[in-house]
Length: 155
Image 1: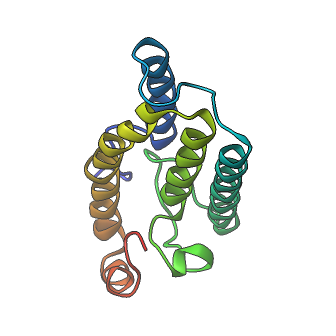
Image 2 (image 1 turned 180 degrees about the vertical axis):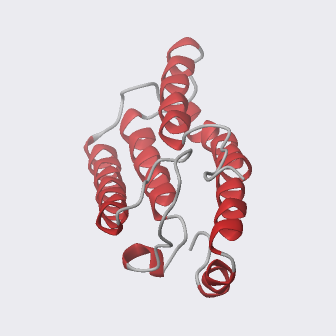
């Protein structure tokens, strides 16, 4: 048995690709107010969301490092994390990516980025999260099944 989750795409690449594609589409086929036309309130709100996403992501990654296991999909997991943000959601890093992405979309005033969030979330759910959960269940067995029963996938 391979000792890692075989995901279809690494989540940072998925989100970064959607940001770039959203900006490109906003430039080629404008939709909405236009790329980079945010007012002060939109910049503040988007910036606040982006900072929350970055903070949650950093805290979640720190939990992996402190536990001595890899945060990178495609590398073995050695520990089942159940503390910190992992007490409230099984996927705080992915939630952090979504919050950061949404904040960037608001700051960039990109309707395309917002529309692309739908396929991004479908790919994330089916091509990453479900595969990681199957791997973790096979690896950690009953301990992971108890964690599944106690902690929601998202929020």
